Image (cartoon, rainbow, N blue to C red; front, side):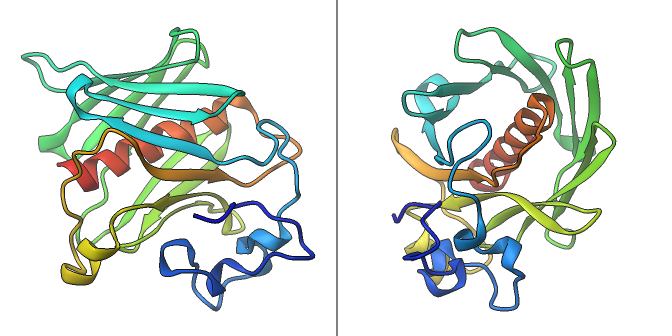
Length: 217
């Protein structure tokens, strides 16, 4: 998979790359990787590698050599719960899955945050949430996950799926279950000069939960 963040002089727009890494041809320059700054304020422009370890009920999100997060499923008799840990295994977010009611509760003592996120459905393929006075929206079109700042509809993150092309071509409206124990997606966060850790990590958390909900459930 090509590097997500490339030098302007030799990069091509996302819409001209493979279907897995494309954005619609009508997208503005803000959706084009060739217009993104070369370095990220937090992670030097490198994409996160998303891995799923089914046997341990864990998803890891890593920028090799820089930072690492993990989302661990902790099921009990009252339903599924998740904890999002930082690289030293300190909890950052607690997530309660209310699947029958169609939403999840995400809370963080560290960031004094408590939000409710409604799962996307077949008729409503968006997932909205507020953090730090900003409203964000994850959208899924059957092939791509994109997160927008809904104030100006500028993309702030995108998840690039891997290993799904054959499944998608045979079943356009469904994604086959994945049992791999290796990198299954990449997450790119658009470099921004001022992006609070709470905003960035919550975008990661919600992206992972939605990804897991749509693919493995």
